[in-house]
Length: 241
Image (cartoon, rainbow, N blue to C red; front, side, top):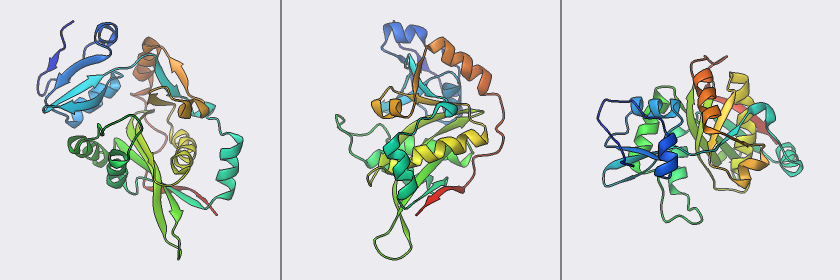
């Protein structure tokens, strides 16, 4: 099966089902990564995975790993940590630092990062347009009352769907605390589905589940056009200790 090249300013995406069958999920290639293409891709259940030679490669995965906020599971040890540890969790306080940290953090089995400078610029543009959001976990500094960034994650929001992209932790448990705090906040804002993309044990412990591509696309078609109850703001969403 030939791999389509997406022409500039043509933001239509094909049905990803054949790509899953014949091209290991590679839907197509583009020379641009602008906001309109990103938003069109997410609405279709497609996302950019990496760049090479000045081109951006667009993928779909199936079955899709998703989390419905009402099924969030907080294990006993994490619940104890949330009660007893000192931390601060914020939304949209440091988007550019979060995406840069996600790009810089070493990951097992990976030689580098897919979050190249072009990706950081593109998602920062989405953030400034109100479509991309970051969640930050801060731990108290060793001395004084200041807090230091310990971990976090970011993603894209369209309607009532939040598409998770990447997370990192500089300190133990920071990304878990950020995620466990962010999901109830996202639910309060009106998010009904979180796209986790990849199936991992980490996400399974939070209650993620597998969804067939057709069902996932149907949910996107239903939820993407719906407005939130309230915007995902620049706020403190959790504090302890």
